Image (tube, rainbow, N blue to C red; front, side, top):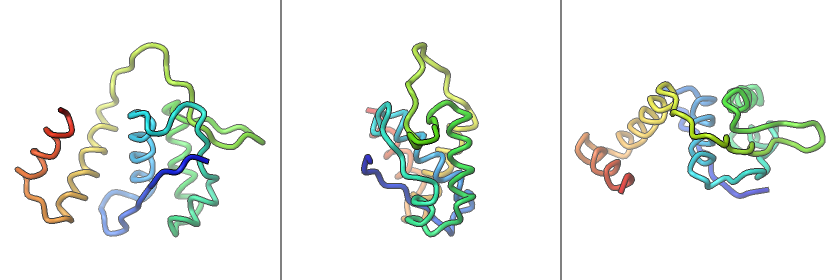
Length: 124
């Protein structure tokens, strides 16, 4: 199983399932989780994060709907084959990622300028 870190901030206004979905999507899209990498079972990830299995299951369902992961009986949940043609980013997913990052940065005490600087540096 591939080692990766997913964290859930229970004080965030973003629902836990959405935090999991956004973090896994980002790991997949950036290539940190590669094609065919095995993800933990719903039950295992729920236990690791201290959440209900239904929360993780919802995140996995949304990732499957976005064709980022696939689940097969006996083979577990794995990162799906990336699409052959470039896809346009979903504005809703981008907005969620931006909100997640902004909320986490503000929790660290970052002001707007520090957040924008971090984003600019990440883009370079």
